[in-house]
Image (cartoon, rainbow, N blue to C red; front, side):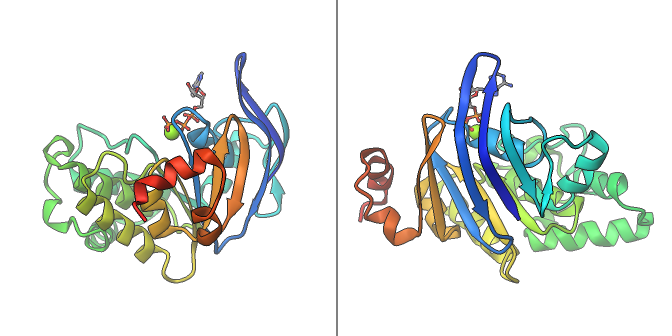
Length: 242
Ligand SMILES: Nc1ncnc2c1ncn2[C@@H]1O[C@H](COP(=O)(O)OP(=O)(O)OP(=O)(O)O)[C@@H](O)[C@H]1O
Ligand SMILES: [Mg+2]
């Protein structure tokens, strides 16, 4: 579903990704780990065609998206449900309107159907009770749930993409979000989560990549991750206390 073939990427003079290659199947649950500023968010932006590689190819669902037009990229983006790091809710709209906005934008549903769908989605992420609240009245965990709800409203996703879905949440809320993430893909859909929180990554993913200095220095399952002798990875997993 997602193939990176020798991808190089830089912002102006700053080289962010160096010769990154990997292939992710539609039903895999993958966590891309790495420190701050290593290029995790950039990888998600490349998958969605928000930024383009300097060289190399990115193939989504068999199609090379590297030179696609904005119009064609819209179709590519519809294949994914994406929750960005910032959550990006509209401050001026309440919870219900935030979710409805995407349905109005991307679907041809009637207002009645939109209302029904919004309630259904809010029930899935368990914030139905907060439907009328403004976004600044939400706790961090609720805010994250609404952001996930919004991403669900946007499309019938083939895969889920999450950027630091649990960062900034207390352990209980983070755990709840992990459960929600797993629940949403229990019918076999895959996900890519980029995060520096290995504890949460281990809860939702079964394949792990580690990004360091623009390169993928590790790609393997949980067992291989936990027994890695790479010192950076050992530092990351030391937070697990096992
Ligand atoms: N729009 C931009 N213009 C210039 N440089 C950028 C831009 N976005 C990101 N960068 C730089 O590119 C590098 C990779 O950024 P990216 O956001 O992908 O990192 P990240 O791994 O997601 O970090 P974090 O864990 O802090 O979210 C960073 O050094 C960042 O400062
Ligand atoms: Mg980031």
